[in-house]
Amino acid sequence: MKSISFFGASGTVTGSCYQLNKNYEPYFLIDFGMYQGTKEVESLNRVPVPFQPSKLKAVLLTHAHLDHCGRLPMLYQMGYKGKIYMTEPTLDLMGIVLHDAAKIARESEDTIPLYTEDEVDYVMEQAEIIEYDQTFHLDGFDITYRDAGHIMGAASIELNDTHTTTQTRKIVFSGDIGNWPHNMMSDPYLFTEEDVVVMESTYGGRMHPHEDTKELMQKEVNAIESSGGALLIPAFAIERTQEVLYLLKQLKDSAKIKAQTPIFLDSPMGIHTTEVYLRYGALYNDNFHDVISRGNPFEFTGLHVLERKKQGHAIEAVHGPKVIIAGSGMMTGGRIVSHAVQYLPITSTRILFVGYQGEETMGRAIEEGAQSIRINDQNVSIRATVSRIDSLSAHADESQLLKWLKPIQGVHQVFLTHGEDTARDALEQAILANVGDMTIKKPQRNDEVLLKLNSRSYPEL
Ligand SMILES: [Zn+2]
Image 1 (cartoon, protein in one colour):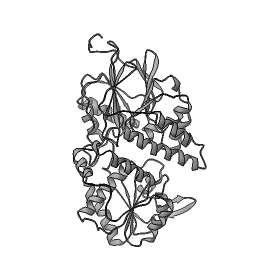
Image 2 (spheres, helix red, strand yellow):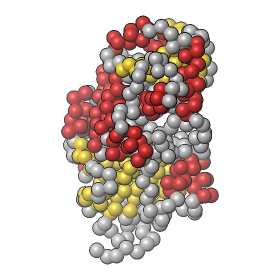
Image 3 (cartoon, protein in one colour):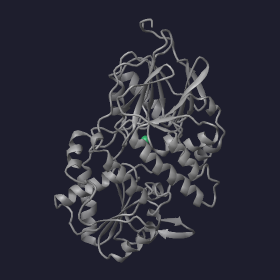
Image 4 (spheres, rainbow, N blue to C red):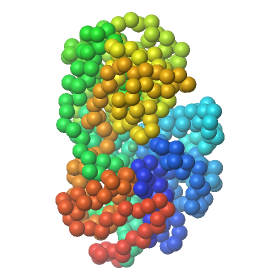
C-alpha cells in the first residue's frame, strides 16, 4: 500500500470517504458518506470529487449511517458500476436510509436532489454481502470485516496487502466504534496487530457520563403520568429508537411505569429499522441474544405503532399522559416537528433528548433554552420542560477509543478522522500520554498521505 487519500470526515465529523492507493493507482474506496450539519458543511456534497470512481477496484462500506453511505448513489452516477462490499444488516439498513434521503430530497422545495430513488435501487444491486470474521480476497488483499459494536451490521475493516514485503501491509479502518458495554450490541472487535490505523475521533476529549438511563427514563415517564402531559422523545431511527423502546419495555415489565400509559412510535423509518433489528438476533451480545430469543424486546403493553401519517391524529385523540417517540433525532424534519407545534406550548409537556443535537438544528435551539422557535412560518412558544439523557451514545468516548487502540501492536502511523479538530487534538494528546509514542496525523480534506515503509520483516512470498 502506498498512500491514503482522505476525501471526507477529515476535519469534519461527517462525509466519511477514504481511498487506498497502491502503485500510484486507486484501489479501494472506504465509505462515501453524506456531509451533514450546517449549510456550509452540507454544500460539500455538491463539490465535484477529486477522484475517478470508474477506476476503483471496489468500494468497502463500514455501516449504514448516512454520513458513511449517503453519497453512494452519486458514485453510480459518476460511473462506478463495481461491487460495494457490506454486511447483510448494513444492506437492509442502507436501503431504508438511502430511500428516506432520496424521498426527503424529492419532497424538498429548496434543494435539487443529489440522486433519485431509482439510483438508490441501482446501488442496492451493487451490494456484495460479507460475513463478519470471514476473510475474503480481492486484488491481492485479504480483507476482513469485524463487528465494530456501533449499530447493527457496523464493521471495522482490516486490509492485508499480502503481496508486499516493503510497503505497509496491514491497515485497519475503524469505521465508527461502539459505546461498550452496551445493552444490546456486542463489544467491538479488538485488533491485535496493524501497521496503520485509521480511526474515528468523534468523542476525543469527552467522556460519557455514568448515569442510570433506566432511572432517568422512569422519572420522565412518571412525571407525565402524574401531570397528564405528553412526553416527546425525538429519536434517531437506527439504534436509538430500539434502545428507547427496550428501556420502556423493561420499565413496563417491572411496573416502574404504568402498563396503561400509551407509548406511540410515530416513525416509519424507526418501525422499519426495528424490523431489521429483530432479524439479526445472533449478532447481539449474549445477554440481549437471550432476551430476543424469549420474545420481541421492542414490543409491550400500551405500545402503538403508527406507520401511516394520517394515524397521527390518533395521538391527539388520546387525553392524559402519553409518550411520543418520533424522528428526526435532531428535529430537522420528520413527524416530531408537528408534535412540537402541538405540544411544546403546553406547560405539562416534557421533551427528552436522547442524542446529540447538532449546531443550527431545532433540537439544539430547544436544548439551549429557546423561549420560542419558528416552525413552518409560525412562532411556537416553548413552555415544555426540557431534559436529556447523555449516555445513550452509539459512539465510544475517549477512554473507550484508547481501550480500542491500546491492544494493537506494531502501529507506526495513526490517522485520526471523523472528528472536529478540537476532538482530534484532544485524542492525539490522550494517545501519546496513554498508549505510547507513535506518529499521529490529522489529515485535512483531499490530503493524500504516503504510508511509511515497513519497519517489521515479513516473510518473502
Ligand atoms: Zn455511525
